[in-house]
Length: 168
Image (cartoon, rainbow, N blue to C red; front, side, top):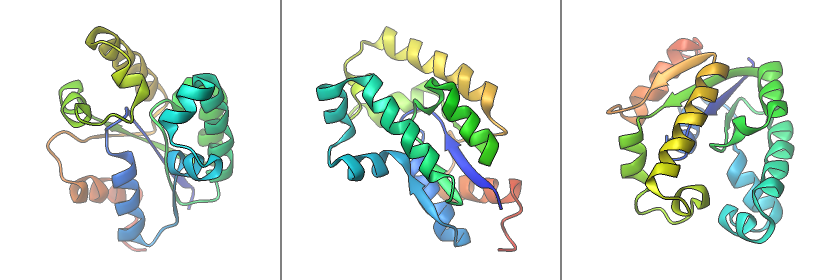
């Protein structure tokens, strides 16, 4: 089986869905953000603050290159910011976009202070970032899963059906 790469905006549920998908179908799993935090012994927000976004994107690129040996990979929301990351994912598996509306994202992230690109921006900038990235997600996705008002289990089942995982 090729790797399933989960992409989508911050707060779309990639980590939660990825973990549940791996547990449900007994697949190996890695979360690139968790990998980076462990490898560099710093929170993502600290890396942004101390080193800046460009350094984080380099860490992210290294993480996605290492993640290709896993069955399920949960990526950071900005993974689509570098073309090389798209090539790595396309060459090693299928890209699943967890499409979540801005309204749902806004609700999920309002109390989450660990999202530097969300909380350092005003609402206009948040909408702009969301719309720009959504265009990229749509462009690169092999499969699009609409997540609004669906349970994690429903999303996992939909991904499983798309990849015929039920027989695993």
